[in-house]
Image (tube, rainbow, N blue to C red; front, side):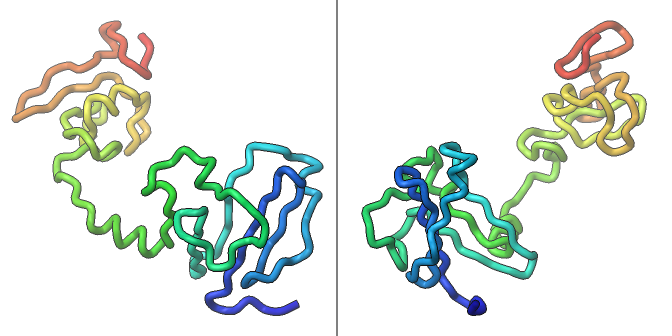
Length: 175
């Protein structure tokens, strides 16, 4: 068996109609695999596992194939319901580089990063959460203490958002 080389192209043809799976290495077909269809007939999804130092580029049909199969075919992208951005899987380092370029407001919620952090948890006193996220918590994600009350903090003032001891209920925390 030959060793894989840098920049090898591994292709996969999932032929559901004829119940076979064919891998291609640099355009050359390997023997078809049919046992998959003894257990599954639908609900297929793409999955791969790699070591942290390995890299791979997936093409589910967003661009022309380097080695297209010899017979007529449809790509995963023809059947998926993803945006153009979701159809592109980036190598880990590229994705991390892009994430480093994203700016998050300094006062953003530490859970969702979308809304302003304006809520303090009692009795522990931890803050950095928006009201929407805080009301879904039962225990503080920092110290794991039970949350008795959520207090909205804004410009030095505190107002009760939900008080577990007063009988007020909130989403995620029944009274």
